[in-house]
Length: 141
Image (cartoon, rainbow, N blue to C red; front, side, top):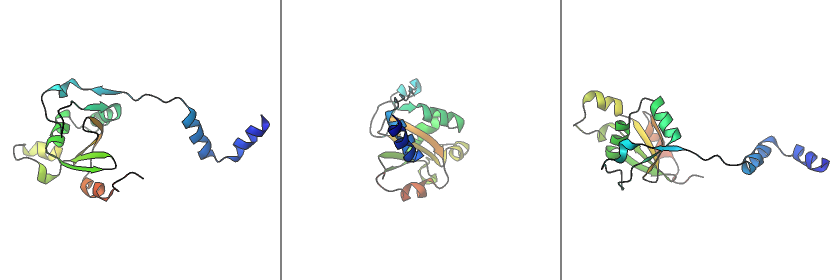
């Protein structure tokens, strides 16, 4: 027993934490299917109602990004796929003329991150989103 304890003392703390996390029971992530999206709305390539992870639901409410803004960003925004994710970015050029000026200013620079066409991971706003997402490598290293 002492030899095992002394061996663990020789392992760096980062590696010890990693070993503990690998052996610990995994928590199941929860999310929400929002009934708002059950209408006949085209979502990217599919008509599947998107699944909001709990993180996306929390961040969208914290950042003041409404469901309508998310829907419009996915419908009209520019799509960039990198690292196994799809980023929908509402840049100024892709905002339809039918939006009011006030709504267009609110929705501009909104980014919606999807994994597969039906899981929304997170939502945020970034003025330089297009530039930063374009710089990402194609694959996650």
